[in-house]
Image (tube, rainbow, N blue to C red; front, side):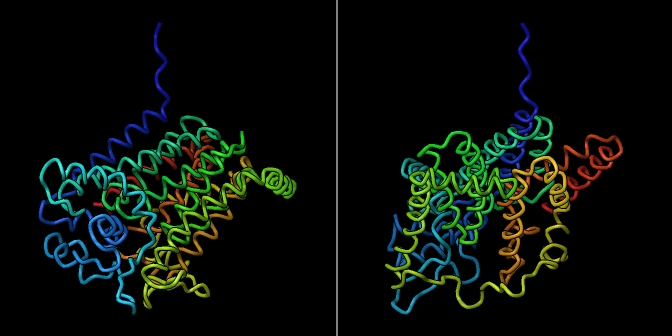
Length: 412
């Protein structure tokens, strides 16, 4: 008896994983004496919690000069932590990304111990473990977003959506070349939030509510603007006013599970407040300095979308299809449309209201990467609509091929 071939989306998933992993090791240059290409600049700031807490004094960072001299991870100067009036350093970035780095850090620590390398958080075993850990965490996100998409779209459409994500968008860049930045990790967090939300409304449990609270809190203490993630569990499945009223009734009926969600989300954030209180003296602390702030009254939408500097649609044109996909999404999957619409509008407002909207060291718009977990749904809806007609299918195929070529060209 012949075995059934595996689903196409599963094959594409494996192809994407091999492509991302291969690209990572093709480009990254590991060097025993210099981690600048691996754990450096902003990435070093997110990561700094781990060597600071396990090998140093997190408020004083006594090993700073020796680390700078040996590995040069901090770029020009040292902006990753700011010295406070009380004499302590406070790390610029929240701790969420460091928490996601911890498994790779632990493996790096063990390997450094066994191989005789310096146990300092930056030596070669940490660099290799860090790089592999970031890529494999991305594999987890691709797996769960595939599972979520399959609940609404055909296997072929899901396969195409994954392929386009990994080959034709800047997600590729932020997994294989800049994996230590928070955006690809947050994509995985969002994929888990979406999948667990779907499961929760199929069968509400305390475990799922707690997991959603933990993941929501993790997103917020990685980048505070990710507070928009709460729109997913709140509005997912709401298609009109009547279904929204039913959702409110569900929250009231399931108030214990709602309390579990709030508790775990608040716990994740409270840990950050404790860190700020201990080392800055204040529970609420603005760690980004005076040069970087939100400009909520003058968001940079036009520049952020179309500028030659870092315009999202300029350098990732395939995502225009996702925006167009909100039309068929409204017609065919209205129970996702409102969640995706509210989330996208608020998220883009936050992204483009940042004073330095071009987000240094980035290709295209790096701050939208995590939102691709949501935007894959309207993208899949657009593909479903377009491939029903021969002419649009041919035109779309050619456009996707162009976007793949353009993305690879601009990435390299």
